[in-house]
View 1 (cartoon, rainbow, N blue to C red):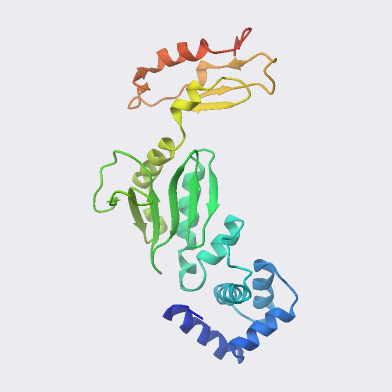
View 2 (tube, helix red, strand yellow; view 1 turned 90 degrees about the horizontal axis):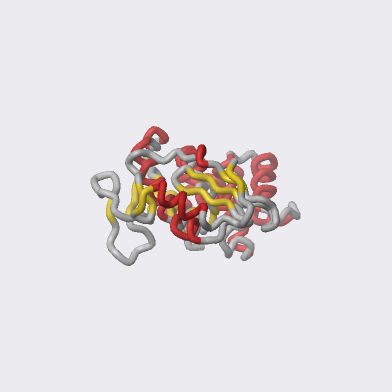
Length: 259
């Protein structure tokens, strides 16, 4: 089994604690008749007296040995159980704090990978996962950010343009959130949201919400009162916001009304 030294040490400690060889532990898990990762992990915790991290690692390796865990996990929760198993389990609170901050930015998709979570809108804007046993790494796809000691600029051609490493939940601060927001906004296709027909879709740009009806035949309603653009972002497409409102209104279906 090709595992790193830290995992080998953890496995040796598990075998010593339980008094069973790895093959015997695998046989015990197989005999349980369970297949799902979470069910096997809970069985190992209750039946073998293992802690969460040890049980998670044992089940992860057992399922890999049977081929059940060869593909990327299907859900974010299952991915996190694998990603933050063993010696990296202590990093999970940092990951949770990062995701809590990102959730406040708006909707996005999570694509679980074997070693990280890919966060996407129209394209990937961030990658979150452990870099070492003591640090969580955030990869950002953004433009024109000023790199430095904390925000590390990456070489061209990589999967992301910037990386940030975190060793504590307190490092999930306003500065980090601003960098993530820049990546999030850049992945949302602001231009496409204004150029597409304003029917059957929800448009959000710089705090402006244009909500389309469930069917094109229904009246379209919108509200300028929902504008909440910051002073530092005064233009969209290089044109004043007022001009964009005028252009957007001109695309509304006949009979559209103002809320």
